[in-house]
Image (cartoon, rainbow, N blue to C red; front, side, top):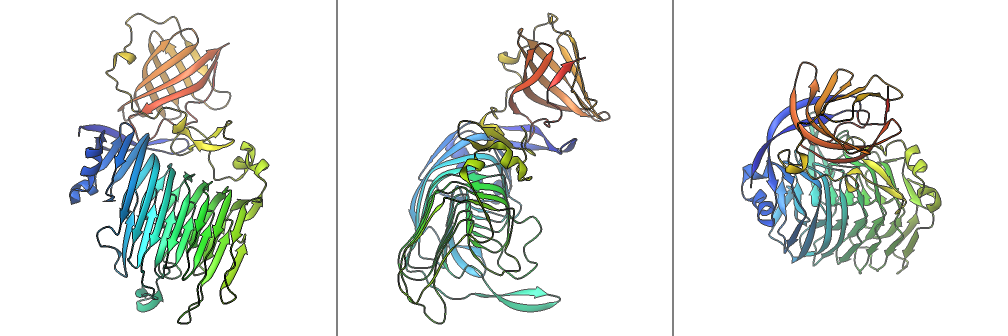
Length: 500
C-alpha cells in the first residue's frame, strides 16, 4: 500500500476550513482491504479507495478510522454461517456481517457504493447483517448499498436483557431494545450511529426462529438505553430506499419497515419508495411476551416512544404491504404510521425532493445530491462526476508553455467571485478564499487544474480538475474529476460564470 500526504478539507457552504494534513493509505487490492483489520493501528487508519474491488469470501472487519470510497464500487460475496463469537455490546452476545462487521464510534465511511450479495446465518442472541455494516455506531455518509442481504437466526435464545445506565448519578435498569433476533438492513443491520445522505436498492430477506426485523436502510435504528441516551445527530437522515423486503418464518415476531424495522431513534427526511413489503409466519405468545406481525411503510415498530421520532418522512402511497394473518393470538399491524403518503408521480419530480429541505442538491460532499432524469430520482454527485483522484504528474494534465488564446474576467450573476484567465494561468477570488492553477482551452471547454487554494493568509497545495463548457461568453460547470481533498470545491465557487 502506498501512503501519500493529502490535505483534508472540511467544506461548508461558503467557506473552506483547512483542518489537517494526514496520511491516507491507498486501497487498490483485496489484500490491501483485508489488511485494515490486522492490528489495532490499521483499524484506526485513514484510507482511500483507488479503484473498484471484488471481495470474494470476504471476512468482515471492525473499523474505527476514515474510509473514503472515492466514488468506487466494492462487490461483496458473503455466504457464511455463525462467524466467530464476538461482542457488539457487553449486554448482548452477537454476530454481525457486512463489508464492515462493526463501524465503531470514531469510524466514518463515505462516498462508497457496495453491491453483491450477503447470505448469513447465526445462532447468537443477536444476528445483524447490513450491506455496509452489520453494526454501525459511527458515521456512514454519501453511500449507496445495492447489496441483496439475507439474514437467518438459528436456534436463537430469547430473553429480555436488562442493562444498567447512570441517570442523575443513580444506576437505573432498563431493557435492551433488541430482545434477541435477526436484524437486516440495506446499509446497516443495527444503526446506533449516524447514516446520512445514503440510499439502498438491494432486496432484504429475514428468516429464522427468533424475532425477525428488516428495513430498507437499517434493521434496527437507535441506541439501547432510555430517554436522552441517543446523542444529537444519531439516527437516519436524508435517506431513501427502494428495497423489496420479505420477513418470514414461524416463531416470535416479524417486523418490517420501508426505512427501518425497529426504531429507537430519529428518522429525518426519509423516503420509503419500496415497491413491496411482505410479512408472514405464525407463533404463540410465550412468557407474557406478545409476538407481532408488523409491516409499515416508513418504520416497522417504535421502541421507547420518547426516543423514537420521525420528522418529514414519506412512503409511496401504492406500496404493496402484505401481512399473512396466522392466528388470532398474534397482534397484527398494518399501518403507515409516522409518515405521509406520497404519490410516485410526485416523487419522480426533482422539485418535490428539493421541497423536502434536507436533500441538499449540489455537486460536493456537503450538498451531495444531483437529479437523474433517467431513473427519475436523486443520486449522489460522484455517480456522474468521476470521483477518481487524478494524478497531477500525469501527461493528461501537462500544460504547454505557450500562452492560451483564451483570456478574460468572469463573474457569477450574484456574488463577488471573480475568475481571471491570462496566459495559461487562472486566479479565482471567492470572498476571503482564493484558488490558483493552470488551464487548458480547446474552443468549447475550459479545463481547470486547481493547484493551490485557501484563505489569503494560508496557501494549501491540492489538485483538482474541473471542466467548464464555454459558449457565448458563459462558463458552465460540466464535470469534476476528483479531488485530493476529502470533498470537491464548494458548489457556490464553481457555479456558472459570465464574461465581465
